[in-house]
Length: 81
Picture 1 (cartoon, rainbow, N blue to C red):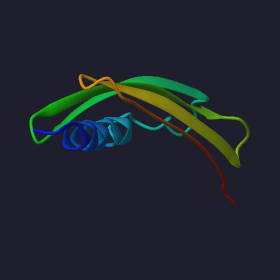
Picture 2 (cartoon, one colour; picture 1 turned 60 degrees about the vertical axis):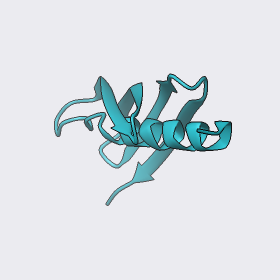
Picture 3 (cartoon, rainbow, N blue to C red; picture 1 turned 180 degrees about the vertical axis):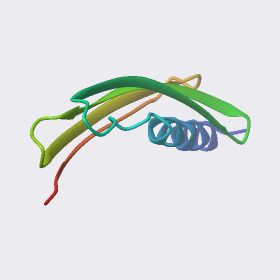
Picture 4 (cartoon, rainbow, N blue to C red; picture 1 turned 180 degrees about the horizontal axis):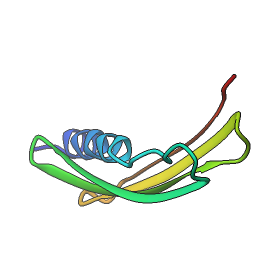
């Protein structure tokens, strides 16, 4: 398999692993978790956090590491009312 496909499949596994990290529960302020996923035989693990800054504001971030040497990462925020 070529390197482009290997990196693409590993990146998809990383993105899926990031989505498997649970959100912070209602009434709590911080959640740290991990997720794992695979795609087309390639696996990744992720670690991340979600923090409730106020009742209306949450932030989230994480990084996934895969066996092909690429990393997937992301961050986000939401304001709710």
